[in-house]
Length: 139
Ligand SMILES: [Zn+2]
Ligand SMILES: [Zn+2]
Image (cartoon, rainbow, N blue to C red):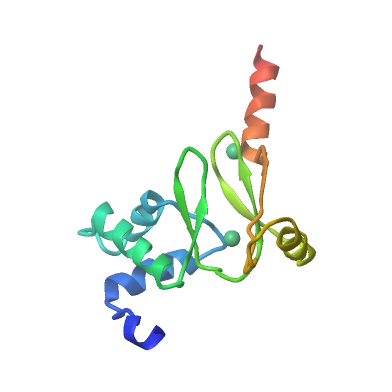
């Protein structure tokens, strides 16, 4: 299956993957576009979005829900957990060991054969927390 579906790596696609791999982040299509425009001024949002979704289909990137229905993209596809800011939607990795027992519990509690699990912690990021404190100080 993999060989048939293998994507042709055009320079544009390579550039999108490079942006995702630049740092440990989970950008939206918009944020990827902003980075890409520095080197590829002609590229448009529709192209970026289409390719990101294609990568996701192929298992090259993982889609992370970023709140307010925003899709964020992660180059690290193997199991890890995330934390999302409920104020700005920023998503980061959380270095907590994978809890395999959750899958056993879920298998026992449902009729499904569990193959994987995702976990999203919710909270307030340091930027938003700082903004709240400065606002409070001003009042
Ligand atoms: Zn935030
Ligand atoms: Zn991640």
